[in-house]
Image (tube, rainbow, N blue to C red; front, side, top):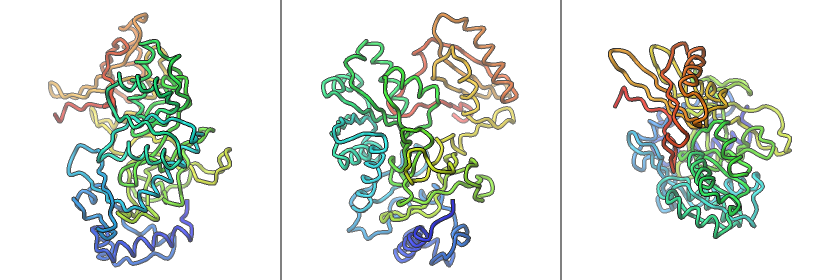
Length: 411
């Protein structure tokens, strides 16, 4: 999708702000002799920015607006390396709330809803983003944060929460608890706004069926405001993203070249109006595609497909490149197992071993099912894993994001 003249003008305004501020990224642009771009072709010659660059700018090297205009910082939720610190001006905070409120509206949520917010607060962008959008919309925020499932369910019933905001992992955990306690008839939820991690179609179906709600995928990342930069509409034909605030490209992750609309690749984002820490051509490592054509809903905002995984998800096992999504797609063909799985990779006696743990009910033959899954996985990836079938509820549940791949080779 080519950049529009208006977006090009906005990019040049942000380049000017970056260079004149002498911020970390502004210095990189100045050293490359870049002060503006005059065409789409020139835009494509702009250097990419990467998370490593942002870490190198720690703590406040990304700050582009004057410090007296910075009202807040947020930090990425990553657990490795230096954190990324993102400064926000009041305009950034307001713009983010506008985008998030727009997400709620697309999901059919109104000021009459009661929005139960379980993602974390603090340096992480999630909880406060869900809340700011809720308040901007005029709905009632119930700012629970994560954990304390007992209290969550108590408040959900007492307050008559109609919308659940959560990671898919915690939404499933709450759904299972509600079923276990037999209180679904006391729960008033109608919709779920789910983000922060990729989730399978099988998991989506389980949550929707067990809670009896409509589900919406919300997209975002800390470096680019936070959650709320895109969401699917009622037609569920991809996630609309807000191109008046962001320009999205899809590139070939190997070559860095743009791919045609409709082809899968890596999402690259440029912020068009961000003040605190503008980013030009930021490589997200998220894999998706731009969906061509108009959405049946009639909204003019462009769409990307659901996130397919990440370029850095790849596991090299026995010399074979394996992506978690490949395993997930095989598991989805077995109706006997739940949505939950875990992959453990270890190196024993000079060779790599992949173990896959899945859950099933006690009325199936675990040994026969294990063999069937192992055979089908082998036909997909070229080698045979060890498959262990366990009873439903045995695999760990998470109040935040589930860790589905554990590589013990590097522990």
